Image 1 (cartoon, rainbow, N blue to C red):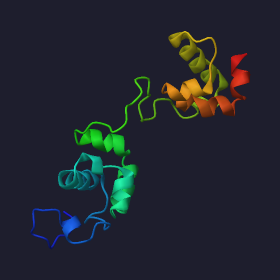
Image 2: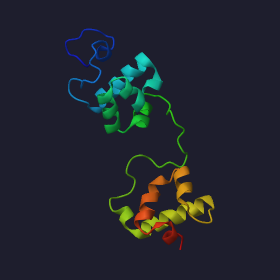
Image 3: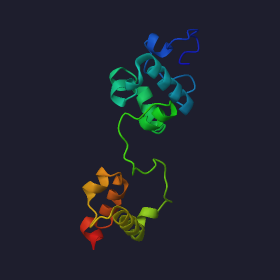
Image 4: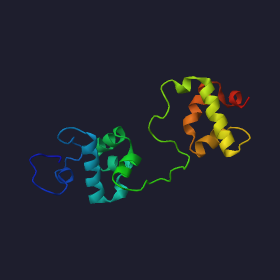
Length: 152
């Protein structure tokens, strides 16, 4: 996969000492997943973290994983469990709102009111939002006047 001259079925990227080389054809998503799978097969699923990959010379693979959706997404595509517990309230990683949605202050207020109603809150607090999977709303509240403004 990483070296067209290699006839070995083992991990040519690791054995040849070319851990940080780009595979033939570049870091397409398929190549990234295949390389991640090789690392997991050779070193276990705990090796599929940014820190481990960079410490062990797989900087290019670490960068490619980030480019193709991040570690949680690549781990899911390989059938692995996430290493961190995900908040049940976490929004999907893909864009769910149209461009310009958050520029309209009415949308920010509506989202905040929906969260307050859904969870029976008295008021909206930034640390609560972050802790409960609504961190996406924080920068938009700050952009439109902050928490004191939105509480009014």
